[in-house]
Length: 127
Image (cartoon, rainbow, N blue to C red):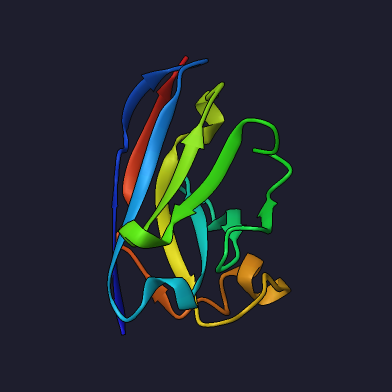
């Protein structure tokens, strides 16, 4: 069992930056592939980014590639999402999730393979 708590959301103007954090407690953080997902009002949840256990491999949605960077610090049991050049369409509740797997797979990206979820943090980008 692992508990996930997101933080760092808020209101930012278009073109600005935010860094989200996901703090994990419970079982060893390093055993999980971690991911970020988001859900905008009236829309389905979508994949944002994922990172392997060691942090050596990452994956991004096309919509955020080149603007967002996912990283993790296993010593601190924390994952991050650095978001730059934010756009109004990035407005959403952002969730972190953990997958007890050793690779980023299609089920990681759909979210169906994620075993644990946080409660989310709201990011609002004003135009």
